Image (tube, rainbow, N blue to C red; front, side, top):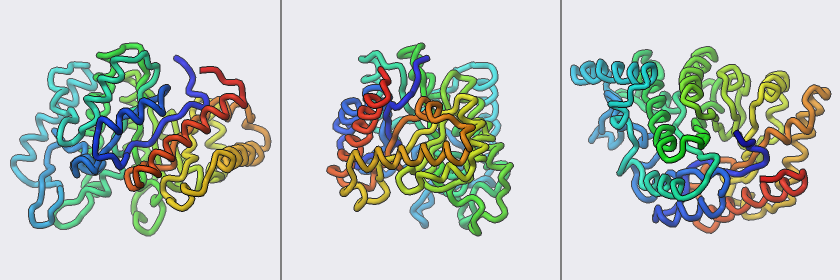
Length: 363
């Protein structure tokens, strides 16, 4: 497999209302690791908390609250649940894909995936990025009619974790049909990870999160893909390392030196072949994005690398970090103007190109 060294990709969402234009931008800017975009401006069902509900038992639209909720009490749910667990067993453990299409992501939940797959089919790509919402973020975002988070219902937490695993498998298998040699990079978007340990989730145990993440990660790897977790904030990075993820993606513009607080974990992570995806281009701070340039981004990256080496007391070699680094924006670009979103995509591409030249990395 080719290395990811200093390559570029992006997190997921774009502000486009035209899916063709969004996909064209992606394949123009990210020729090495193209991704499919979430386009909530095309349809609200493309919001990441809604996008993955197809085939998941117990989720329904609540007219009074005007949002999707879960209902784990109805007779219908228990009937669906039995079929769901049978499907999971067949797909994951027996590699029987007879019912995998039940867990596809189709319109109106995506407008871009068919376009993305067609573009992949027409090019010789070594990598392709896909994504799901992370189980912790989904479990704390999806609630029942009383406003209780699904995470606190052990049965439904398992449903969400296994459901997202099936969503990941469906994407991986779609790409394998096109090109069996392609390496899928499956991102889990886990913004709520930055809240772990705060008063909002004081009762949540670290071990519970590791177990959830590890279940999805292990299956992703078993199906031949790389696993990644995106968290656009500070986090307890040891959780991600302990869960066995291949790639850690974080907001490296606002929190560029946050990895240093977990230097021993990062040492183990990097020495086992893990990658850091530096979210170096600020998409969460519009003013910063308007003002920033390649020189600032390069300096911020180099300072963060130096900080990690220094805090490791030389146990992490600088060359190792460079070899196992690549770049993304700090988060999705769906909340930006079209102009700023395009600037963000261009800057990620440019920082990748510049640092490849600097470090003599060939494609």
